[in-house]
Length: 163
Image (tube, rainbow, N blue to C red):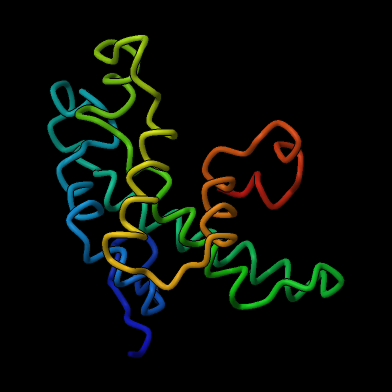
């Protein structure tokens, strides 16, 4: 399977790897089309209808730009294609756990017993890897999950601050 491109009105054509397309084509990711990035803003500004789907594609693209610039300008970091793909996947799926109206859900609807969107997203993604048999090793899965919600010892590492 070859890379595919999706047209974005902000970033123009964005290239995605076959693994990213597998993720984008899942029900779990497609549901982001129905989640508003800007919460209830559209009730005041009707044209403010940006979705978590569009946002996630853009984040994935911006991660690609950042890491390729770092690879070019700082070869000592030894950034390779797989690392870029994994961090891009982190950017792609970082909002999987959002509920309706995004942060409004976490701040006003979520109970204290329910995890916040980062943890919900990690759980959803782990289930997706198993359900769709995605070509992601256990170590790579842990790495992607740490990209989304870095443990304390990784929070100041540059790689975990990109997404």
